[in-house]
Amino acid sequence: MALGSAAQANERVVYVSAWNKETRAPITGLGVDAFTVREDGRAREVLRVTPASSPMPIAILVDNSQAARDYIADIRKALTAFVKVMSGTGPIAIVGVADRPTILRDYTADPRQQLDGVGKVFAMPDSGATLLDAIVETSRGLQRREEDRAAIVIVTTENTEFSNRHYSDVLEELAKGGAALHAVVLTRPAGSSLDDPARNRAFVLDRGPKDSGGTRTDVLTSQAFESRLLELAAILKSQHRVVYARPQQLIPPQKIEVAAAKPGMEVSGGPARGQAAK
Image (cartoon, helix red, strand yellow):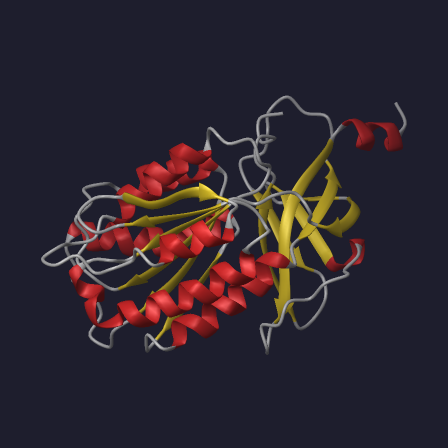
């Protein structure tokens, strides 16, 4: 079999965001020379790069626990700006994490309903956060959707975690859902507690974005939520669809890595949903 036909029969897709390392401004219009793709450490040939155009559902997991009370106004302002920019990219859902995961607005492409969901974000008195439960339930919900790309966006403070889930179980469900996890975290100089739920939460917020092809950004003040979410929106809206060749093989790779092949550029991304086992 000729190499060309073998590559054609084994094409795979990754969705990749690229941005300037210094300014974090998104970079668009890139070609096959801009990215490297590796499967289990083995380099693969990049065949085509085009702008991503398929719908991308976005689930926003927002901290509306007691710990976020003093920051809710800034969180709503930031989410309003983010939703306005992302409108038209795909359906958006908004989920509160106080006490238990609660859908404030189910997936909708209607801009007015999206903003109505943001308006329902209020801090619940005497509540703790169940962020890990929310990631698991959201990921399971995404498994039933057919879009070939998706994102989970977390907007949270450092707080007490009430979910009793081990980080490995959460990361496993995240991988099954196929969404890139993006986290914007308001950190405190003193840090958070060191009990088991806190350690599991910290590990998920560290490994989840890396493993899923997402990003994590820490902010020191709630006023920075808006600028960071607008930054993330610009990056998400400028994704590339990268097609590469996979040699014929019986066992799918365990790890797919995408990296920048040009200096001064950073990238994040992961495989298209629904193709991992093919």
